Length: 258
Ligand SMILES: NC(=O)c1ccc[n+]([C@@H]2O[C@H](COP(=O)([O-])OP(=O)(O)OC[C@H]3O[C@@H](n4cnc5c(N)ncnc54)[C@H](O)[C@@H]3O)[C@@H](O)[C@H]2O)c1
Image (tube, rainbow, N blue to C red):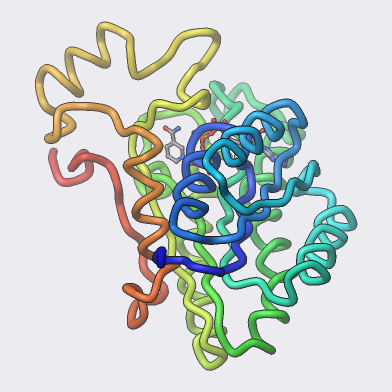
């Protein structure tokens, strides 16, 4: 028996990076995982990995900002399985390397639409099923950039900070229905998102010198997707039953130093 045996879980942005690792770990713990992803080729790669692992899953190629497509996917999952136990709001973009002096309203709105509004939409779409079940877990993937900034990425940081506030609001509203809502704030992770303009920011000499060599990250390394997926499984499992509205920071100790 796995920690998530038979639970129906949705993971958005499951095509690569953290989303793929979360989907794989949930499957390994016995969950049935609905993979939501806008990129059909990475979606197929995750599905192939899960099939090799012998996991139970379904594929839903969609953009999470498309409300009608998202609603249809949720209906499809409910038709197949009759319930939704867990939603992991993971899909996001980090497109902005510009400051407020250089970015555009259009860029701001695009980031907020994916990184914040789609979190609201997905939660709103699954909450009624969870209310009628009398149970559910909603897990948001925020970021340490939701409460600290290294400069730039303002729209990304604003969305990630808003998620932390919204986690608390949702937790209070949904607790009477047996729905627990928590968030995870990863630090520097090695995923395709850490590659900016063709350079992996976790591998530059400056990064290695400061964060690894000088132990600005006390654990002395960047995070791997598997460092976060176990935390998400914990939040989705029965080991997490008296905790809601919380943010778990998974950053190798980075935010504990100054
Ligand atoms: N990589 C990091 O250092 C880091 C740090 C802190 C937080 N995070 C957060 O972790 C989560 C996962 O990040 P990652 O590093 O795995 O990123 P990633 O870019 O490697 O993967 C994100 C996935 O989401 C998908 N996606 C993006 N927009 C979508 C949309 N509109 N509809 C459907 N799918 C969409 C992408 O296609 C991709 O498969 C994100 O919420 C991110 O903000 C990442």
